[in-house]
Length: 161
Image (cartoon, rainbow, N blue to C red; front, side, top):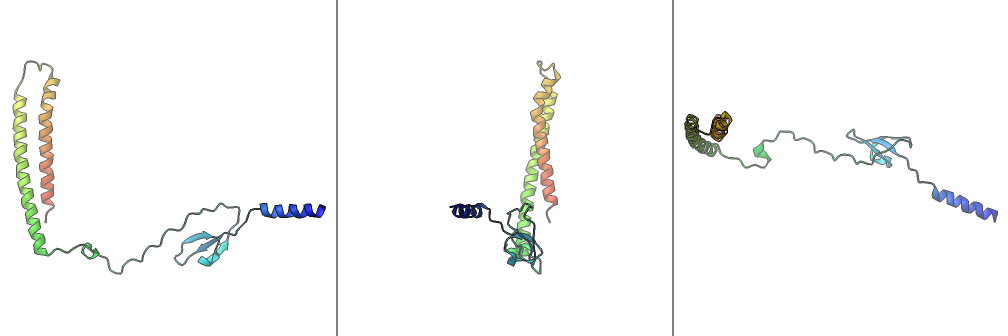
């Protein structure tokens, strides 16, 4: 009976002990370091001590080798536009921008005139100057908006070829 208890104790002890595996620090052909339990995946594999924590994050995917010649946007799948077609498109763009600029300059002049007209008007209930400023603010905002639009259109036209 004593032998039977000892054998049962030995079996229980073997079953309850955790399974330890050896962890290797390996370097692959590209020089990346990998930690694994399979030492056949890399070179220079060295066993590391088991008391160190090990992360289970996989290695990053391999990048394809760079091409021998740099690719231009047209060679990367974009359609190529003939030079005369591009010049025609640029001319159309310039014409559209010029017409938008002319319309915006007219709107700016109108807004400035409306602001000047409102600045010349004084009503009897505006003894407090803040009321005058409050009444003029929408007109000033409109002038500022058209000034920003005119500047943006001029910058756009300067960037044309």
